[in-house]
Each structure stands twice: as structure tokens, then as C-alpha cells.
Figure 1 (cartoon, rainbow, N blue to C red):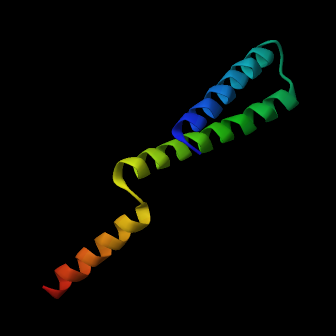
Figure 2: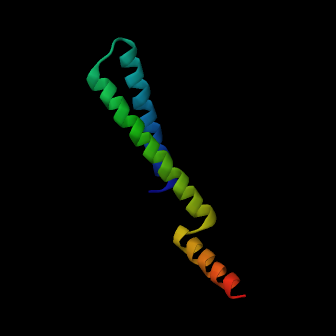
Length: 79
């Protein structure tokens, strides 16, 4: 997924969450509350993907970063 696609998904989920809060303001409905809880989990996951992708774009592949750090650590110990 691209950052733009993630943002679109976040926007759609946020709009739906607003609708669900409005529905719940008229009275508690277990199905609506359950959908809201699932939507909150989805939003949390999307924001996690967003942060991870931004970090990858900014700093590079995490696996490569770890490999470089381990190599530097080995070189420091050998010196």
C-alpha cells in the first residue's frame, strides 16, 4: 500500500466511525458498538502501517539497517 492509499482508508474509516458515534448517541446498540470497536482496531492498524511506511521511506529497509548495525558492532568489538 502507498501512503496515499493508507490515507484514503483512514479517511473512509474515520468517516464511518463518525457515523457510528452519531448512531450510538441516539441509543446503545450492541452491533453498532461492536462495529465501532472493530473499526478502532482497523484504524490503529492503518496508522501503524502509515508510521512503518514513512519510516521505511525516510530511513530505508529495517532489515538493512539492522545488518549495518550488527556489522558495525562486530567491527567495534574487533578493534
